Image (cartoon, rainbow, N blue to C red):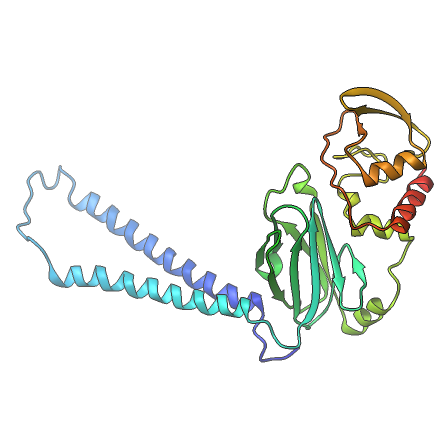
Length: 299
C-alpha cells in the first residue's frame, strides 16, 4: 500500500480522539470546580456573601478566548478529516453499489456483480452509491464511512482495507420492515486472489446469482424459514392461499404463478404477508426464467 496514502480510518480516528480528550479534560475540570465551590461556599461555611467583585476582565477574556480556540481547533481538524473522506485517490478501483429494499448489489467495471463487496487489500476503493427505491445508508464502521444513498442523487464514498478480513456493511437509514436484514460484508482479500476472483464467473447457478443481485434473499428464505415474504423451499407445485382484489383464493404455484409473482407481485399477494414486494421492471425474460427454474429445483 502507498505509505503516503491517508486512509479514511486514519483521517477520522485522530479527530475523534482529539475531541474526546478535550471533552474529558473539560468534564473533569468543570466537575472538580463545581464540587470545590459547593464545599467551599456552602451556606454553613459562608452564610453571607463576602465577595464585592463586580467583574474580572482577565477571567472574562479567558473564558471567551479559550472556548473559541478549542472550537476553531475542532473545526480545523474536522474539516481536514472531511476533505480526506471526499478526496478520492486517483488510482481507486471503481465499484457501483446498488441499494434496494432490502439488499446490496455491487457491480464492477467488467460487469461482474456480487451480493458482497470484494476488494483487494491495500487498494483504494471508490463506491458510487445508487438507490433504486428509498433512502438507504452505506455504513462501514470498520472504515469510518457512512454516506446516504438517495434516490436520484449522485453520491460516493471511498475507503481502503489495510489487512485481509471480513467487515460488516450495514444500512444506517430505516428503509422499511426488512431494514434490519439489509446486511452484507466487505471481503478484503490479497490482490492476486482478488484479480482471479474478478476474472472468473459468478459461481453457482444463474438463478441463485440473480437472487443475490436483486435482493430476493432479504425477504425470502431457501430453507423454509419464515421471513418478510414466503420461503422458496418447496414452493413450486404447492397450494398457496392468496388475496386477489381482497378475495381469498387458493392457487397452484406453477410456472405461470411464479412469473406473475415476479413481474406483478401485487396481483396475487400471499395471505399473511404484507404487499411490499417491488416490481423488477429491469429484469429480462431470460432472468425471470432462470429464477423460476431455480425455485422449481429448491425442494
